[in-house]
Length: 286
Image 1 (cartoon, rainbow, N blue to C red):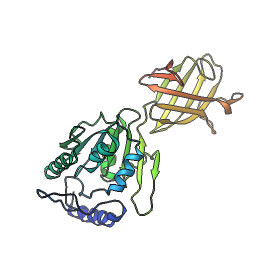
Image 2: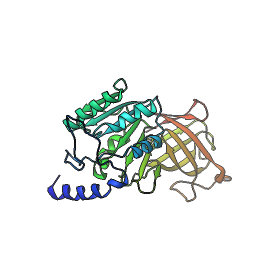
Image 3: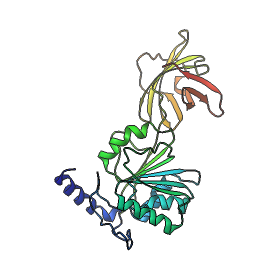
């Protein structure tokens, strides 16, 4: 990072301290970090405890979750995830002194049976097992991480303090007066391509889908030339909800009662399952 970029980021982050960042109390007798101190890619500005709680609540963390905090600093988010929500948690921090401080903080909090601190690089460490991912990194790093995040298991919850993911719109945004915004995404399943359906509003059919993150559109065409319906909808993790589109799509033909046509499906790899239930009703062709 250039000297100019570091100065600009410092001015920005210090200006936002009151909006969701702590100013002290993070260190111990061995090491006391300074707010705004330089790091590998970003400056260290810890999140206020109240906003940590809001982020974890927004992700609906439970004892069944594995929370990964990227750029975990003094370890407060993994520690809170374990103490307040009973989750297992892992923090990844590049700065060796901060990582060691985080480990000591976990020991003092009595959560080392559920919390692990890794001294490592977030672009090299494997966090694919996470069910919840927390971030306070900056938009440039969020965008650099985005392709990796989108390859994670569908349904993984991603929560970011202050910074968004560009044109990947959040599924939810929390705005509290005098605090940083919190953005929440649910990693969507990958559905772009062609599928065959054994059962649909048109009977046996072929489904062609285009995908832009959680937004989906496509055409459902009956096998044997029995008509077609333009569809649009969205993904909530692995759950795919489609309904008749308001506008025409290439290859779609108007059919009677199209406005009432809906599909609710669960994506399981290359299979589409009925909802409710687990019966396979469709398969990916390509």
